[in-house]
Structure formats: C-alpha cells, structure tokens
Image (cartoon, rainbow, N blue to C red; front, top):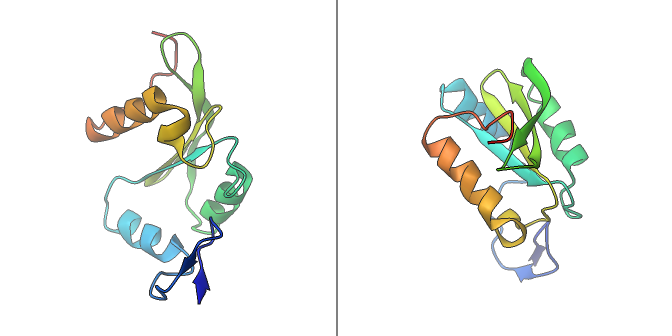
Length: 122
C-alpha cells in the first residue's frame, strides 16, 4: 500500500514519482512556460517547502518576491526564476481554487494569456 503525500488516503497506485523536480527540470529545459503556485496557508505543502524544492533546480532568480494584485489588494507574491514562475496565493490553503476561486481564475487567465500578474491594484 502507498499513501499519498498530501492526504491520508490509501492508494494502490505505485507509479507516481517521488518528486516533480525532474519533470519541472525537463519542462524548463524544453523552453516551456512553467508556473508553480501554492496557497500561503497550505499546511500540507508549505510555501517554504516549495521554495526549498525549487531552489534545488538551480535556476537563477530574475525577480524576487514581488506582490501581485487582485482589484484592490495583494493577491499573493511571485518569484520569477529563469524559466519558471512561482506564485503564492494569499489566504489560500492546499486546494487554491477551493479557498480563493477568483484569484485561481486570475492565475489561469494570466498564464494562458502569457501575461504577468498585475504588480499594482487595478
């Protein structure tokens, strides 16, 4: 039996990778746009753990800790790496769209539109 890392649910699948870092490395190396996002109140996979993991990729930081905005408030923070964007969502837990659906939609909209998140309120 295998336990999922982010729940107590038992799974009979044993073909999942132990880490997504090799996959992320491959995608970045191929020149694909990659965004990794995390709720900043996620107790299962905290922002600090994600940052520590991304650091193992050895990517150069292009722009460190920049706020991004929804209409009138900070929606979270971004760290732009060479080839990858890490985005936090303020006040969201493990399942970001459940906690912050508008902010999650804003992330998807900007990712698909190949646009940076707003760096000032709009």
